Length: 359
Ligand SMILES: Nc1nc2c(ncn2[C@@H]2O[C@H](COP(=O)(O)OP(=O)(O)O)[C@@H](O)[C@H]2O)c(=O)[nH]1
Ligand SMILES: [Mg+2]
Image (cartoon, rainbow, N blue to C red; front, side):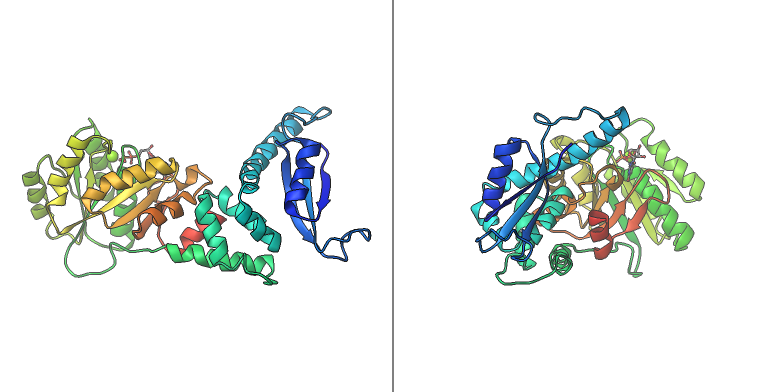
């Protein structure tokens, strides 16, 4: 697989050379701006841009590789293709191209943001606010990255639902089916009762799925904490009274489709009426951006007070979290990172979330 070098006076010209030689599915490996000293002596251009690229799937010649090299190459190619997919649309945006010509270092950073799942307009805005497009900035790529990440950090807000100690804290966990509500409650109950030595009680109003109450009861039995089912508002109030001596009450809710309006209304009637109950919305990071936002909007009627992002271990594009925070600003309370109870959870911190997305 041959890597070729292309040089031209502008990025656009260099990209045209790549396309002309390797076709429009070429994979761009790197882009940089050469200094006059680095460029060929014959060049009269003010600046010189260099692109390293290789042929894409159609033009590629992968002969002579053994099967394992072949599959490694395939992985590399698909990774590169995803980068290329966002670099080529760039060539459509004159504004961005001009910005990148002023500072080619920003291209890699842009690619990184996109690769981590940050939506294009946000990626552009973060770069811009981070100073990537300012003329005459001689910022190093490290300094630039720091500036841009600081901008991303500004979007993240966190909260600890169990922080203050005045009176009982009642927290209900809502979200689409299978997002991880019951598992997350088990993780939290373990941490609160075993590590923080708080008196914890559980309530399950997941009365739709056979065995749903049993799942929570099993965790409750292991932890030695009380657990009551509730099927109506009266039940819920009765359960809360029975747990009135507990520091924290965690309420599991029916795994339901947010497209089921009748059930959403039921849920609202159950937990929305009680102002002492704070609601927390669980969203899977391993879902599409539109699904995530649809769920957040539908569950919005329950006036949730924080996000919990689950299944962050199932995707690399965790920047979807940032996209969601930009759509509907709300603090994040917890992040879950796997199926293991109680280990796979961490309390949200701004830098923790940033690390999760970019490392
Ligand atoms: N990979 C991964 N799986 C998770 C995570 N949280 C929960 N799960 C799994 O998702 C599935 C559904 O979880 P459950 O708690 O029953 O979801 P619920 O319907 O919202 O209560 C189970 O197999 C869990 O083990 C997570 O952070 N990462
Ligand atoms: Mg459940």
